[in-house]
Image (tube, rainbow, N blue to C red; front, side, top):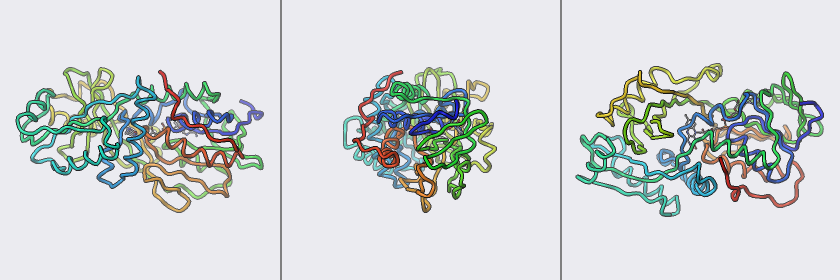
Length: 394
Ligand SMILES: Cc1cc2nc3c(=O)[nH]c(=O)nc-3n(C[C@H](O)[C@H](O)[C@H](O)COP(=O)(O)OP(=O)(O)OC[C@H]3O[C@@H](n4cnc5c(N)ncnc54)[C@H](O)[C@@H]3O)c2cc1C
């Protein structure tokens, strides 16, 4: 890449957020570049998720109704746009006499989930009691001891990396350019826009979007003049994979240790169990993220509690991965759309945006929501085109 390269929009980071933005911006006919420090796209958080395209039942407990509604709408749309990649599945949610969340709490939550999905058929759920609950649960291999009810609701599952690659394919077909092994370490504001620099590259762009995921604050710190630091925290979560030795259903369970929700999911011929949650104290930890022994044993304990006849041991582990998510605090200059997704922008720093957080599920929606601001910065007057009709293929 040489200094003569000049773009309308430069996006830092080829995770799902960066690629979704590249697709949406290229669709407008803008000249788009995505710069990624790794040799490949989607090697970080976007391939280390629970692989769900979901409303997020647990967000209801936190009162995030608007977020859940948005996610459920996106779930419906992505099932249509990428039917080979995003598929609805029945999820089993057992309630026991000793569960932290009572029968009524779950029933109310699922009713709310259904209402937020617009009472559509794919948002409906069933509930089983007594002998019917015992029968269904035992067919699924679930522990039936002190079982009081079994709920079955729908959510969607995907292959996060494959979904991201389909978005990348679409963005490339629309004209986006991708540059790998290209780490941005300086973003200098110029009269025309910005100059992005790394050890072996130099690029000019009128607009810059920082979509560096858990490195968003580090890239933000590369902006000159230096803005105020982002007010974010980082959480890491691990998943483990085992061979699929029995006929498992998709299960949403409660850890017997601390009541946290944990998924046990058949996925691509394996059994995926996750996630844990820990606060990252130090940025250095990002480079060495891995599932710890303690997390492995925690996840195995959840599995073995609910599937006593299918007990797993640590030496059967096939693979594990750990990803980090950004949580943004809603402070001044942060335009809050909920703690899960905040976009930093301040006019003193020109046409620069930093994406803090976001979910796999909402990558398309949030990319589209940023378009009007980007169009204003580029002086683009034509009406904006929506990605909601762009089909995604493997
Ligand atoms: C454990 C866990 C489970 C999750 N499960 C789900 C789920 O089931 N469903 C859901 O909807 N969401 C889920 N999420 C959230 C979702 O996975 C993330 O929000 C999303 O993947 C973040 O994507 P991203 O593009 O922002 O970040 P990333 O995928 O991390 O991409 C950022 C990219 O920026 C690059 N980069 C960094 N610094 C530089 C630099 N200086 N120069 C160039 N490139 C740089 C990185 O190499 C990386 O490729 C989960 C998150 C976690 C942590």
